Image 1 (cartoon, rainbow, N blue to C red):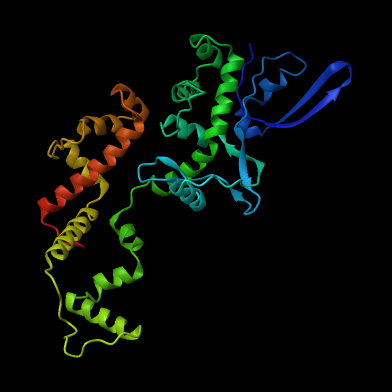
Image 2 (image 1 turned 90 degrees about the horizontal axis):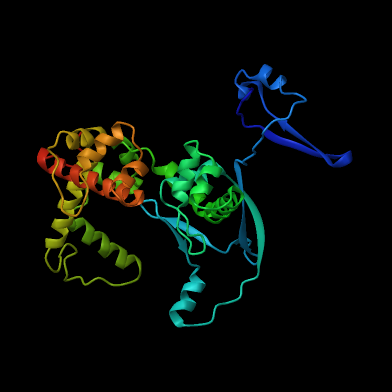
Length: 342
């Protein structure tokens, strides 16, 4: 039996006499992966074909007044996507006013299916009451090679129905997935110390490295600013005189020193410290991160680890990031590093 898999471009569809439909698929020699002769042997022979689009179509409501999407999204530090309410809508909710009717139009957009499926598999996609299915599991199983027919049989529905449900779900979460993909591309690689230094605002970097400002200078600058804005400083009041104590300021400066020292420790050293069993245990985290890290290095995915621990992959990843930060701070204190230390 001749069998092959490839991802062609559906180029054209022609309706011919006697109800015959001609479908033209276009591919490349490299995409056929050496199966050119095998494909040639299938000419004029019937074949079992299943087409699954790699592009997801979805609709976006556009405000015709601004020509911008009605709904926008933001992503927090842990990768959770949230809807951003427009300022006017937020004000209406606070004042109890009726919602303004916004003129809208529908625009069809396209997105790569791989991006949306990653978003779903990683556990970031939301659930909808009218689609009460475990799409994270369905997408993961499909990517692992299982057929829609097998999954549909377990769910006691037809394969056509499950395909319809998956398509609907992908379309709904597509805008969120694209926003999450932007966040992922910006944060999927840990920054080293030099990158973090480069990210500092120019004014802040210059202040810390070249011309530190003392509390006296800060007060003097404030006095200069008041004079510029038209206020008359009290000539009997020294420009450097401060009111109140500096207890909170001292605490803040000490915290900044610890943060800078922690930033100087690279990810590899932090993870080796955790694997050594010397890292502290924090009661706020219910996970054995030494074991989790070992499993990650052995090739397990967050989804698989989370499933074995009966938690959402989003939860364990967020806790892992926070745990590494606390371990880095612990290492910095232990090493007695100062800000900027290598």
